[in-house]
Image 1: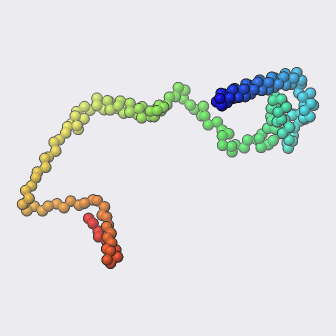
Image 2: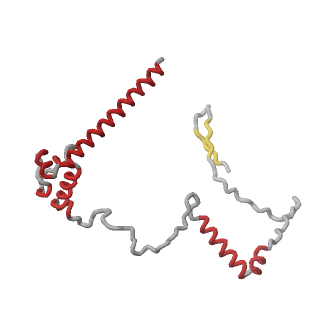
Image 3: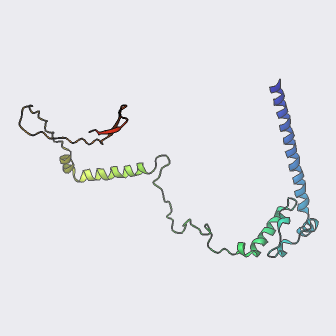
Length: 195
């Protein structure tokens, strides 16, 4: 029963939320229609705001950011702020993204990249390498055949143990390790270097 009650309570809450949203949209539409009928001077007088075109540097425009102020008046106030404020009006050129870095004047039309998503640039490079290999084969087929001939390796000979030839000592390239031993009787530490 609790799952069923939860479902219906959630359903009722969702329906109420939809009705509230629809009612809010209807009220907003009514306000927009009422604002559209009035001119800017009337709206500014009703809201107690100065004309946005008369704003000067240092004037507070927070009143224009209220929800009751129509969007076009808010935008007019912001435009005036940007014109009057020297920090916003005069770009000094030191901003990071103030330039157009698209380089559209020097871009070649129909420029294609060699990068392929998921494959990278390797497949294009491999295709170019195959083309150059084919060209090299066509130019010098005899040289490649001569280079690819395999010479047989000499077979190793086994010598008898009784020969007088000096035997070669093969150096062990493994790192040398130290081993530590502790004797219980003397409790002295001794170390032996192993080969």
